[in-house]
Length: 103
Image 1: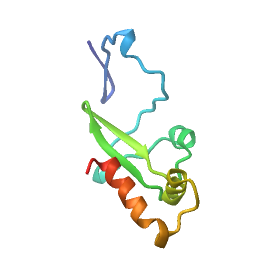
Image 2: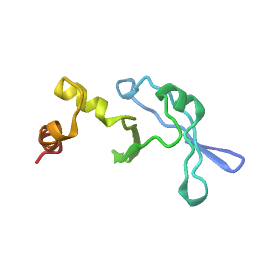
Image 3: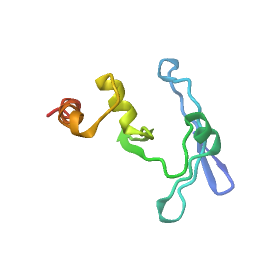
Image 4: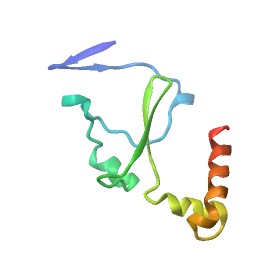
């Protein structure tokens, strides 16, 4: 069933309760040059900041936007269990990244 509200279309469909995911949702509009502004409530929920990098992918016909760590060296410190020192830990970090990338 489709209902017309001015120039926007609202689509109503039945979704089984088992497919519902409790999450925060907001509506955004694709603007000029295909830009999408992430609504303030979502930016606040995820502590997103201007200039922060995100990973975007298509999954089951949906766009998934995943925040990337602000400081990747903090993640490396967690993985190796001590502060990261490039000269000492670069080989270990590369090996860890290769295992995560499936190489």
